[in-house]
Each structure stands twice: as structure tokens, then as C-alpha cells.
Image 1: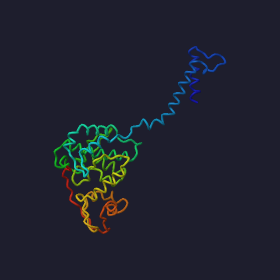
Image 2: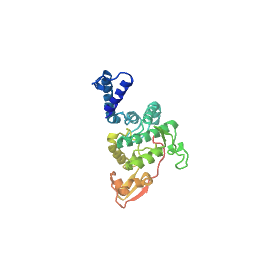
Image 3: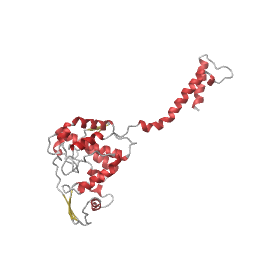
Image 4: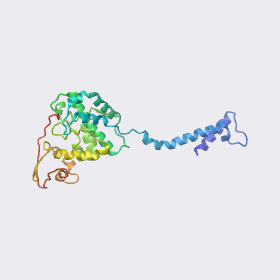
Length: 282
């Protein structure tokens, strides 16, 4: 249809220019007409390929290699952080944060790519917050005390793409709200002793589920974070109190704990909260 329409336009052009089409010949038989048709066919072919090329041209999830290397270099397997080392490699940290800022998640990314991006972003920007203010005894000293207004987690200072986020936005407005994944609590690190460890490798989409399971297992069985005395009694991190609803979506809290705990708790086990230590995780 489009080819014939443009053929008619070409004929009209020939007539108006005084270069009429010889009697008995099609407008497409003229040298100009043949060239014109070739151009139009190529244009139409390109238009049919655009939908196919679109996913290829779309921005892909960024590599977390820089962050992975920094974590392996400056974080121990049990989550102790060498902030002085991060300060020495501040330029590399900046490179990674700039990479995240230039490549915010897009709709066509897979779920695990999006989750890995936001978890790594939360942890990397938390490290930046400490690095920029080091030495500091606790992350809580870096903000005000007005709940949800001027704490270190409530301040909007993280620019990713065209949006500016707070750490709370990433944790509560994105990770918890969109995916409702309880294990994410064990992946996010708040730079404090009682928080789940900062993993000494970046979260990767192709192994995210395994990494989250490992974080859950390590946190629940770490006696400095949770103390399970016996099947009858345990002191658990306040994380399980603060976000109890996240852990009871598919059962009760004991069910969740027992899915990862080495020592299993009875249904009627006595549970009390463990004091939370906000000292820096170094």
C-alpha cells in the first residue's frame, strides 16, 4: 500500500517538473523511479526491524564488578568493614555510584536484576555515607533524631537517574513494597554491629536467591545477632519485631526462623528481643 502511494507521488513529481513519463511505461520504469523504489523498500524494511531492535537498544543492567571487588578487598566474611580501606579507594567507589546513577532500573529488566541493583545501591551509598563522615562512632550520629524526617535514612540525597532517594525510599518504598521479600532484611546493611553483615561480594541477579538464603542462614545462626538457647527459648534481633509482618506472610515467626535455624524452636518457645548495638560495624 505504502509503495503504491509513494509511486503516485513520484509520478506527480515527474509531471510537475516537466519530466513526464513516456507513453506506455510505468513511472517505476524510469531511472529515478527505480532508485526511488529501492530507497522506499529499504525504509520500510528498517521500520519493520525497529520493534525487534528495541530491546537491544534499551539500557541493560549495569555491572556490579567494581562494587564486588571493593567488598572482597575491604570486608571480611563475617561482615567487618575496613572503612579506611574504602577511603583509600574512594575514587573507585565513586565510579561505581556514578555507574548506578547513570543506569537506573528499566521496566524490561528481570526482577532479580532490579532487586540486585537496589540492594547494592543501598549498601554502597551507606558505605559512602560513613566514608564521607569517618571517623564516626555510629551511623545514627550523622542525622537528626526526628523520626522519618532528618535521620540518616530519611534524608533524600541519593540521585539515581532523574530521581533523588533516601535510604528509606529504597528499603521501604521499593524493595519491601514492590517485592515483599523478607530475606531482603538480611541483605541490607545499616553500618551497625547488630545489623545483618555487609556481604563481602556484590549481589548478582544470576545467584540472588542463593545469596539471600545464605544471608538469612548466617544472620539467624549468628549468636551475636540472635541467641537460640534451646528449642524452648531464644533472644532474637529486634529486626524480627520491627518487621514482623514481613516474616509472617506465609506462616508465623517461628516457622520462618526454623526454616534457617540450626536449633529448631518449639511453637510455644519463649521469644524476647535482643538489645540492638548501633556501634559501627568495623
